[in-house]
Image 1 (cartoon, helix red, strand yellow):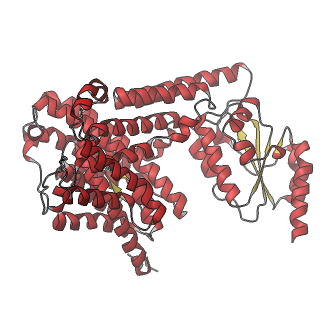
Image 2 (cartoon, one colour):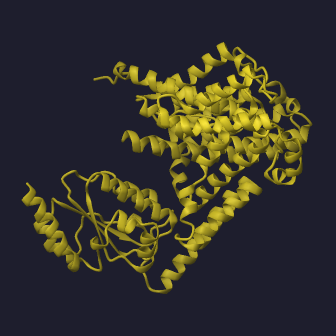
Length: 556
């Protein structure tokens, strides 16, 4: 039996999901384009190319892709450097286009050499610090446009030029930007059926137009199909080759991480499994073509993807429709975009910046291992005020060195340091034999070995995904887990949260001091696992277990 190319029963859902995702993407594409320094049209070109091609060739059925905050921040940093080297945006286009195309080609290469499977080894504090830094950069660089004046090209410039901000402030711009922010946050309380960013964009633009407010506007953008931007590729100064290579690589790595994180979110909602390497190939094709037509690069967009799924999107056609909708807007409504005020786009991007900041990671800084907190803060500060490339590199090096130190400390204490790859799920230990004879089909035992840290959490998450529905109680043996880092802690939280939703009871045996402190520090204990379900050894837990399983028999 041949597999259908497309199941038309999904068409209605794909149409509605794609259209709503496109509506959500429109104001963000324009805003990210302006922030990049290439203009609103570059954001729209990028959203169309990446949106259509990543959906068509990628490995996540419901992914909606386009310009994102992290990718735009890196692009804007690079574009500012390119302009400083060449004197103008027009002169810099060769360097910019070459970098974006090469970045896409790197992603395609990553997909072919199976690099997608290694993204999971990025430690949580590094990703958290980087994303929070990106969020801060977006907020800081939008303060000046929000006030109606041109923004400095760096976060240091934002601080340095505060006197200019205070002297040139445009009250009308702040007013219209403030209206945008209010609508962005308050409109969802009325209805979530229409994206608040779009309502804010249209409302604030109409207020500006009819009241003839003196605020800076986007200005007319080209309509019609984009042309290939290949002229400058043949006149690149060899001195720029290193910068092109450097930023192409960072865009490829960041785009891959950004997209695969969104793919995991899509998997969790749809209960499907994405193909990591195919996703990188699709994203790479989209980004290479975006660069070729003068668009900014993008990645899987979390908000657009979630909206697509919740609005009925089931297959890759929904992502394609999301991109085609933006193409229709470009062909038919390009001239209307000229009347959009820049403070309105700033008013949309500032909340986006706050949403990117990892509040959860920052809130737990005092409760997670001190080394993880230090790594997170260092990466955040270097990202915000230094080099994004160095921030990630330094963060990974620090996290690796600190883990090696922890492993050495554990070895010195004579504690086993074997990895989670040695986990022997259902084979009972000696103290579990009697229990298994009586309740083998009702309980599920997981034996964990060694420290639960960033290198093993992806495998750890997989182990708990498909537990039989007949299982009533999960027993997690942590007798041989001496240490949990921040990544492992959040993996444990995610697992226990999902198990709670399924109504599965969890008991933890042999919890050592450091893991116990970590679980209590962010309220995993008692919120997800009550204190009464923690036991020092299996013997002390058997009576509770028998009592719980006996209750189930009586209920039947």
